[in-house]
Length: 582
Image 1 (cartoon, one colour):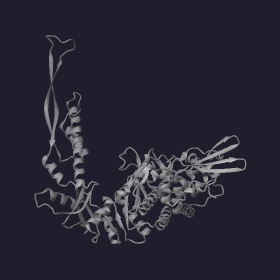
Image 2: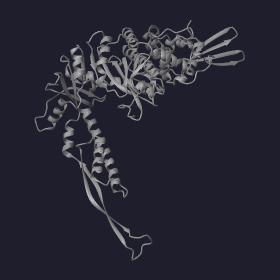
Image 3: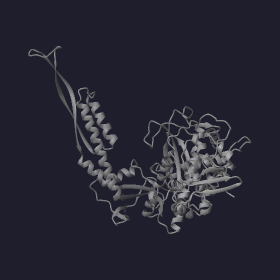
Image 4: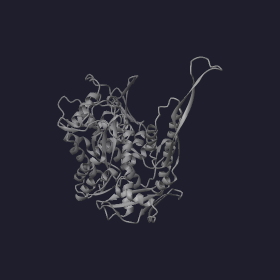
């Protein structure tokens, strides 16, 4: 976290003096908008109820410091050691702090605030914030979507190699696992998030050891969500890791509802795919949805299998076929075949090299299998391995060759490979293009309702994208596992505020009959404004305080048309934005 600095507060704002005038400037930006969201979340008050009490020596109130850190994540994404300097450029009253308190913010104090946050009962804290948000923003909890992502870490983290207890609180292990960021060289944690379908607002998070699998987390998460909702009557949507007998039967037996993807490894999936690849009668499909572009062109046509199918647990299986997914599947297969062909060409060059180490057939077969498996084209390419004798002549003795030079023939065993597309295997694979099965315990939902519910699952991927790109959460450089756990909770509150602001602004646009806002450069229209875009639009707003003798004057940057439109939709008075409180 860095060395502790002295207790002398740093200057707040920028000061200029000229001819008896003192001009102090502060950044304003979108901070008042974000603070309004956090105020409605009641974050500080709830934090104060759960955090250990601040002592008389606490230089900055812990709850307000943590809220300030969340605002920083939404606006600047500074490293923790830079948060104090960042906050010092803003008007202190924006954060509900004094100039002296902001001036004393530095990495060690923020680290100590994270230590206090770690010691709170995290589930109780999160659920109280979420319950308040649900009431304040009238969120619907009828449909909840769950997924996970991996957070990469640099360093050894020897103290967190195994799950254990810190200060009597369970902490997961930072270790190697299946990296969803394709960084198997880095240790990781598993970050599990649940969002609503109403604005994709995060309502719960938890972490698990980096080597955990998603199927181990669903029951515990569902129990907490049931406590949050107050009943089992909500639709739980997740990816294929939910589709284990234990997970599905637990939710079903406890009155819950779920929708998930049937994995390809399940017997029911394999049997159906084998059936459509056979010469038996073709399955009958019924079109349930047609998506068109603005010009009327059909972009996607979704059909459902008319035949009712059931899992071994007696749950309902619905097979869907999408023409758009069909095109994507075929394009992806072509890319895989091209990638495998390039790898086989490289292998062929190695086989022909005079220094090749592929001297026996087993090594060549292993290399071919690794290429086909790595590209995912087993059964699509036929590879023949041909063995032949390679003759080579060398001088029997050293020296300049002449008419009487003797040569010795050496014969070595070499291999060459040839390959071609397996037409039969390719035809069988194409029969399954565009297919995906969903499994649910709901019988009162129509196929279209089941399909549309699952199609909302990518909403959570958007939150993960913001989590990693907007917040730059990975990689994390903190060394204390307790502070990492607490920081991830701050990220959750920031992500919730981000989602709430987007939801509020889009609902206001819909109520006002506004389809776009001029938020892109050159005031180009934006149909679905994001928090990141709003922050960028307000970046240049400042407050100037001019003092000459006993006279004081305050000015705020003149607002642009896009800024005024956003503020009006959010219910702000334009004349008050960015000004000092009375």
